[in-house]
Amino acid sequence: MELEGAHVLVTGASRGIGEAMARHFASAGARVSVAARSVAPLETLAQQIGATSFAVDLLDPAQVDRLISEVESRAGPIDVLVNNAGVENDKWLHRESVDRLRDVVRLNLEAPIVLTRGVLPGMLERGRGHLVFTSSLAGTSAYPGLAAYSATKAGLNNFAAAVRLELRDTPICTTLVATGPIDTRMWAVLEEHADLAPMLRRLRRLRLIPMKSPDLIGRLTVAAVQNDRRHVRVPRRLAVTFWLGESPRRVTEALLAGVPFVRSDPPPQN
Image 1 (tube, rainbow, N blue to C red):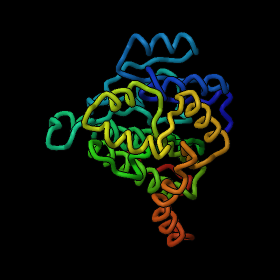
Image 2 (cartoon, rainbow, N blue to C red; image 1 turned 180 degrees about the horizontal axis):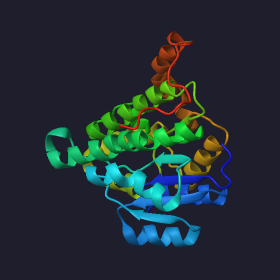
Image 3 (cartoon, rainbow, N blue to C red; image 1 turned 135 degrees about the vertical axis):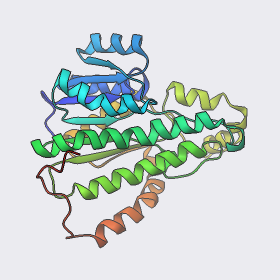
Image 4 (spheres, one colour; image 1 turned 90 degrees about the vertical axis):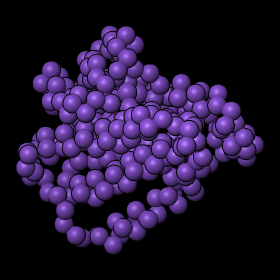
């Protein structure tokens, strides 16, 4: 996709990967809208990159339901939706609060599904669009202490794959961003938990979880959108893990080759 002048909405943009993505999309010439719950850093970012900011709590279903219409009414049709907002859980399941578990599911899985549903009719009508989903290595491999987080990221992976199949005969493309450890506040929280320390030490000794920067992920994501690539996978040394997780979805694609799905004509609005 040509990003010069394209309108990109990035959720979870107040820090970390989302902030880096927003900066790189702006550098590529896109008109950027940024959405997050943390108002002060969001507005600072918006001023720095010339973006339009939207304060939103994606844990509130009512706010999720109206975000796409609010963004498009203020900033114009969305060409690229970046579903980046997310939250981790960091306790053994029997110790985690039910409220926290519900928050993880709502933010990591329900919100991207609803936002994608909201933006697709317009993209299909205009014959232009790209969907980005920020996932994780935890969506391919389950990890103790991250049960709910891993479940939502696995769900997001399958959701992105199913949407990609539905849109196969349209101009709309998808990119799934799957990463290992990123130098963000979220990873710092995991590092501080004694329950997870033995697992993390084992993976470090095996050199399987090298730390990468949000800036790298932002740069790779923008390049993927520009070149219509379906995946961003970091680190490369875990490529076998990513490919093993992807293989059942590739088999499904092969089995459904030639089966007609959604065309470019707009679907019903209700």
